[in-house]
Image 1 (spheres, rainbow, N blue to C red):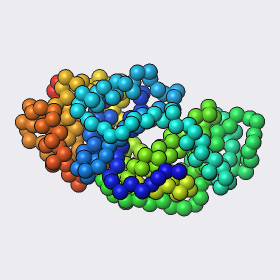
Image 2: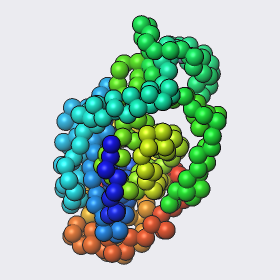
Image 3: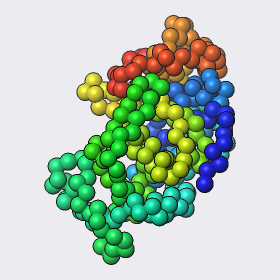
Image 4: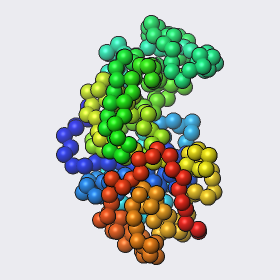
Length: 301
Ligand SMILES: [Zn+2]
């Protein structure tokens, strides 16, 4: 069980080691870092490699090296999700003990044929154990979960109608991200989660899990997602948005502007330490745009 009596602000940055650092990664890192520093809190790093099928070897080290080059300073030990399996298993057992877990033997093809992103509940009455290959899903109830996002405002979702019974442990035996992130945030006593708006719609599922597992619910703060001209998330493979530490001062100022801050025009000519000190002193979360998708304006390299 998490020891949840932390009164200090504690934030985190949780990158997936699936490629190089790009502009969007830096936005989440900078936003969570400034929010922690401005609140005189701690800032932790977690490597979200629970989906080992997507992990790229060496990517975690490259991300950390880039963060170091930008002058980020983190607190405590860095944890890897791939090393936390026993804790995810404990959480799963707690859900099983509440009769909230059922085995789903639907194939990917069968699920695709339902033409819906929402699981139709086909296997709800299945009981464990089953010998066929299966995923483990969480029974959802017809309840609405609401939260007030610090940037994006009031959010509301009916967990059964808008999400459906979601996967906790995948067919390939990997724990699902939704469970891993909830367990990790509780174990690390995270008090506020600052991350990209691509996870805004996952938040209710995570709050639902927190409630079932008896964990506290942290505050949430979703930042606009950096997108290309077609409104697609800027991908790590796109050269233009890849972070180059040679231009770190300009790139840090680009991120500050993207987050609605107003750095003076000549700030990018300062040292990285001076830019950080300006950014921490002047950080104003209420200036962060409330749009979920924004195309960034990047300085010429
Ligand atoms: Zn099923």
